[in-house]
Length: 471
Image (cartoon, rainbow, N blue to C red; front, side, top):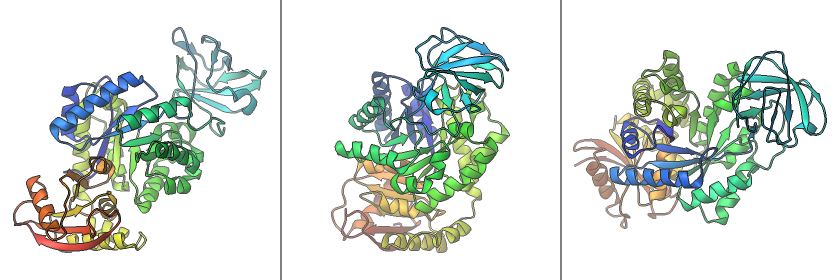
């Protein structure tokens, strides 16, 4: 069983019952729905289909809603146009149909805020414009730094410009409320730049009495600058290398990725590494060696999850891509030095009762060469605490809550199991062991380290540890 979780974007290539079922079996843990595209009606069909398949297969597959966020895009073109290096080009806030001389932009304050010599990067930086002059309060004169193609609704990045947009648009609010109604498990907050962005989403969720987890997408310099305050507020982060690699020099991304993963690990929160991980498998049956190494290095860095975007949304081989990701994860996880990982992590986390028991549990599992760690959890806190110490053995997390079960879909090395409520402390460990045995996670003769809390069902009450040989 792989420890690293896999997030897959669901799109035309993967939006069928057959393909979804095969992807689930191949190792998918979280379905990502990109709300920059598609209507609520279209997403509702996808969500219902995912729920149907996960119920049929009895698999703890989670749903992640990725918001549009405060992004900037070009307006409409009748058809794609070619831009030639050195030619002049007008960016305007007026509503015009794009040509090879002018196009509109969604950010209405751009003329007032941008400066001459600023860079405007379009379509993930494939086309770069440099500002020559601000002609008036709507039009900006630019020159093309390179040749490229422009077409409708392409994304725009302006490095160094603090975009003065409300963090949550009316669309974002509507999308999140739709997510609440349809029981999504995670919200990926696009273009998170400060802790207040997460707080705004949290207030909206609280208004609707929702406990959906919020994942902050770190995509630009301001998000990097404020990472500590963001991590303190968010439930986890995504290293969104696409936009980050446009606004920041690409050669800096590997180091920033390592820093972000390390910070998330120290905070004990899940971290997703995303963008172009197996990009060539969009059209090829096998990945490049560089892509395999990229996925492997993210796992070695300590990422909780790796993400597939276009590869599974629009690619020709969505199932094979998930299987390849699983194969890479399994291969790398076999080579990890778990004694070293435990030693490195044992002294890094604050000493709370839960952390102390989790540390002792993982230490005991290592010393006894145990086969599994088994825990009962009402909130998911204990499994997440155990995950921080990177144990060699699987963490079997038994919960009575479907929501808690699915929230553990991003926690490294945690295998959630849904079960009936455990009402008695007298036989709690016996019941947990039997559940783990019935679900095939352990067998007779295995050594299991069990941990839980009394009173049963109270979040954060972890205070028990027991070693047991499975009967």
